[in-house]
Length: 323
View: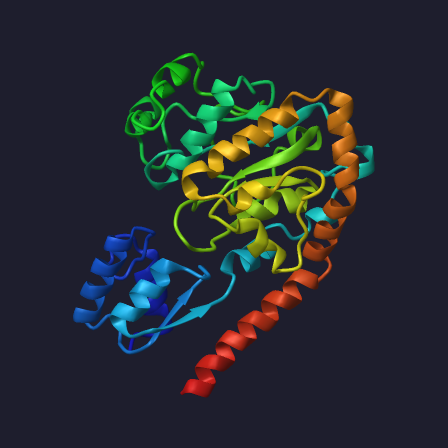
């Protein structure tokens, strides 16, 4: 059986047969090769941070593995964003002066993150440009021009090329000349402090699965409301870990819409908020403060960690009891 160090190396080396990405066919093909080469054993366990996942179910059924789940990105976020609650970088919610509707960072926009291009299409088309937005001209991960990346979306959005052609790209935040990777730390404190909400364009958007990353916890740690562009039921999934969301302050029914219309529903919500006067945006933020502060306290004062710890112990105890 492979050692722990060997498993780590196999699953972090993108050139190895055991590396798992999010494409179903590639996952199955690479697992097949790894099993054949005896780099992985069966029957066994598939430990994953994706819950209620059709992809995980299909793989486990094929290889007769038992799925085991824990919220990896929850642990990562607690680690990466620790200590920010003891700095002066993040203004108290009572002191915020809201002048913008949203902040929307975008870095990797091609490949399997095309939902970010769709979200940008609606932002550009609906002229919601007076907000804090970033958008590269070339996807830093796929090394493809954004103008080439949108070609696959022309059938769905016939005017997408003309909409993007009207933009002066790249769009950078103040003080940035490119689109740096900021996953493991918080940033954009000034932009966040004057925005009503954080538009989270998650890593995964399609299919039946729950998969939230550190991106969702950035607004929580920054003391902000949020709208999540993620898989169906993402808000409900987050609430299952003790967090609260913003139904009653604005319409969150987008969360349960099908993949084909969810982004359009989110865009409609953003547009309605963007059309409000500044005083009304400030009022919404003030209404959201109770939820914001609950989430911040839950994240930083041990509530979330306890849920994660109980979940992780349960997963590990399940392995021990089965053996």
